[in-house]
Length: 114
Length: 115
Image 1 (cartoon, rainbow over the protein chains, first blue to last red):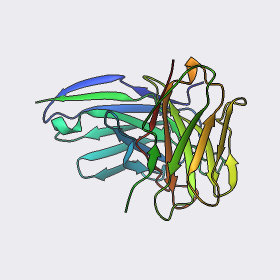
Image 2 (image 1 turned 45 degrees about the vertical axis):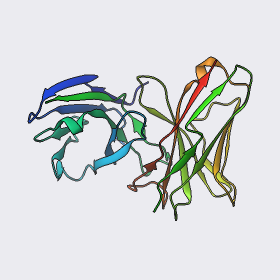
Image 3 (image 1 turned 90 degrees about the vertical axis):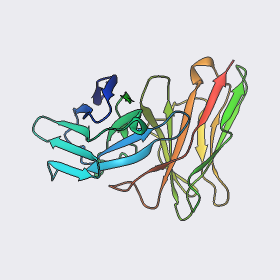
């Protein structure tokens, strides 16, 4: 059973556009939602994270929108650049449930065309 | 400050052999997590360790897989009698504290190929 569903699987956007990646979760105990960026041959690197007590968080060109009632959250990349081309993973954690591992979505391959 | 280090970066084994993957956490981090990434899949949590203790192995296959994090030296993920289905990228991550809202810093991964 996939606990975090991520879409789309792949996305192509023109430079300067705003790619949006969506994730939905099932476990209402999740209380920490990070986004990771992964380049080919590298490990994932944390981009931005949010807790469910806020509906939006912005860091630089990256924004997370969070909808607790719908159990959904999304990543927006403003003024996207070719260097943003990478695979993006959403993840979730139940910090109080004794589970220490992040639950990841399947990833979105993002290509920003020049 | 060096990041999380993993070696080898690439490992090729024949079916039935053993694979040993090593992970050195970031300086000052005593919490290590192992994840497996199959092609076109997200990362799947396997095990969480602190020095000399396995804290959470809920994602670890019951057979052939084991992990340790000794008092001295790197954390080791050991896969005995490898099969083709073990081919994947194995990532370890570390954190300074138990991972409640704490960032897990990932290493570059070990890509295991089983022939």
